[in-house]
Image (cartoon, helix red, strand yellow):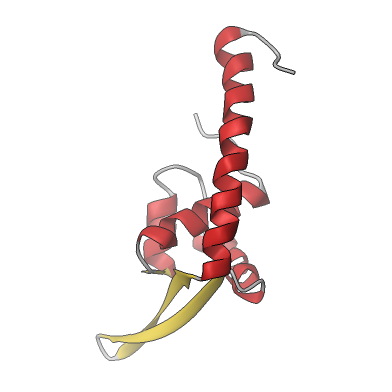
Length: 106
């Protein structure tokens, strides 16, 4: 079963993937699809917004006579990812308490 992913969580996932290794759009989409249901057409606006917010930057590399646009995380993006990761740990703990134990944490 796949759950809908909010914009904030999608941003964090994109930042995390490119933090490990720069990726081009199609490659990034394929990596993201291992965890969330996302299309290339849905991902490109996210990439543009993250670039506008200076959390990602892009560069072109030649590939088979064409250029591929790669995305990499910036220092600001690394900071944002760290914040998201900390927030996710709390969120996940609360969701796990409800789903796995039937409890609501305060």
